[in-house]
Amino acid sequence: MVHFGDFQSLCADTPSYPWCNLFYRQLLRGSPSTLTGISSDPASAPVGINPQCGIQRLGHNGSISNVANIAVCGASIFFTAFLIFICNRRKAAVGRVELRTFLGLYLLTLPLQLLTTGSLLEQGSTALVVLTAIHAGVVAGLFWALLANAIVATQVVEDGTLSSLVPYYIFTIIFFAVTTYISLDVALGITTAVGGLSSPPESLHSIPLFVLTSIWPAACAIVYLILMTYIVLQVLNETRPMVYYILSAALFILSQLAWFLLNRVICKGSSAKVDGSFIATLLETAAVGVLYLAWRSITEESWDDDYYPS
Image 1 (cartoon, rainbow, N blue to C red):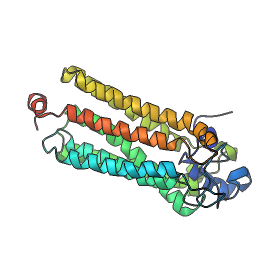
Image 2 (cartoon, rainbow, N blue to C red; image 1 turned 120 degrees about the vertical axis):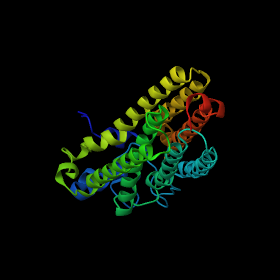
Image 3 (cartoon, rainbow, N blue to C red; image 1 turned 30 degrees about the horizontal axis):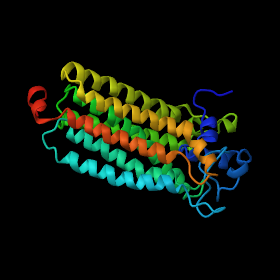
Image 4 (cartoon, rainbow, N blue to C red; image 1 turned 90 degrees about the horizontal axis):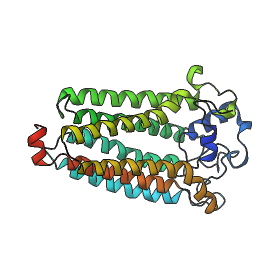
């Protein structure tokens, strides 16, 4: 029976799900007999816990690693860096510093994702655990940054000032630190309260980790869309920018569907040579690109003057 906070089905059914790296180390130290099949040998094990399909580590059984997702992550790094560059050129745009920080955080997730899902590092290794924990922390901070961008857009506080940036950065650091610590605790068993072995071990249970890596991002994305809808339709009295926001939301939803529904299908169809994570990453990056276009569309100079004093 699956309970709230269980990662068992996610780690078995979703290839390259990064947070499973944390539970692999947990089982390796507390219940190694739970690791069976392709997960039994840490040297060759894919990302996941006894997965139905998984890309084995580079160099084992002819594996060339998760090469498709590595390539898409690499291309996305350059694309996101370009977005940061052109964002920085819009000196008078509302929320420029805050959006630039959001893009910077997304940029940081890409090399981390490349390493945590690329089937490059040995499962259970300290290096993979630490990188995965940092990855989880950056993701939690990223979605706070997304939500904070919507709050800044309401002009409750003036963008780019200390009253905006100090809480923005403080909460980003808090979400990063808390999520990173919890992730390390889950893997290494620093405490029994958070990092104790799941009961039963194969349930891979952690409510704090599940909330911070699944519930929190979804909640932030929903509230962000609600706030931006209000700003665009009620404050700006415009409709065209909503096309961008709706498209960005649709791309993000499709990326999650690709990750959780299409991923295993592609993995099995390719005989575990590639999985659907590259499609999910491509769609996520496209969603971020469209989000930039949405922000740009509501920070035209004529709108700045009428609605948002800079």
